[in-house]
Image 1 (cartoon, rainbow, N blue to C red):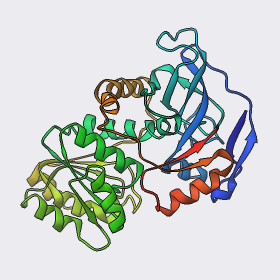
Image 2: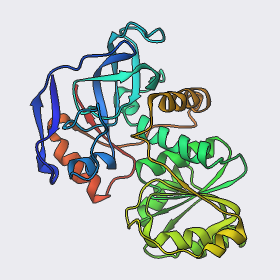
Image 3: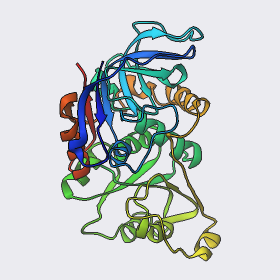
Length: 327
């Protein structure tokens, strides 16, 4: 099969199309003929040598989400059959024509979605559900602040939280991105280059603050995040683009009874990821049929142009998801 491999740690140019053996599957897996694979920031970190894949995952083939058709089914798999259209979260190996997947981590592709659209879903939808709704316990009627609103995670969080009955505020880095976020469902988008998000949140909430913050920034965003939370608020950390070492006022956490939590997804076990998949299928997938949630694709690249896709991801010039096509 053809696969996009990391020839050595480095810049986007180290991604090259190469031949690799087709994966074998276990009795609890399916083999998917990949039509498309989503691009995510962890792929970029892996390419640079900063995010090694877990044991058992392909070491030189990145890719955490795919869409395609099942071509082979393991002996213990009853839910799926050959020919089924699925999208799936994987621990690696998604940038390839074939990928093996634990059966529980697959989701049916909604009827009206193209493969390209379906490939943009798993990584961000699993991440948002497990953090915002499982760990963050966001409830209908509550407020959510999402940093990086025009990113893949941001676009997903806006649509999911709004569909589930919450009010969403976001930050983004340009007026164009802010307009885009509001168009897809954010109540208010704050341009962090021209406004102080903490002050704007205080104004928008009459000084109360928001119930939940989803943060991929870290660093010096941490203190204003805590100041922007309402009493009993929850801060959810999923990345630390501005750094991991911060100083915070512990008395603020105590006075407001705040919760700070975080998670990574890739290293979680199959049982956990399978449970998230079933929660998404039950609670979120119906919104695709109703049209309340839609995939947002910014650009599609052929597999041979994976380096260009990574350049775009690193530029942060995109609004929505970037996808590789293997068709």
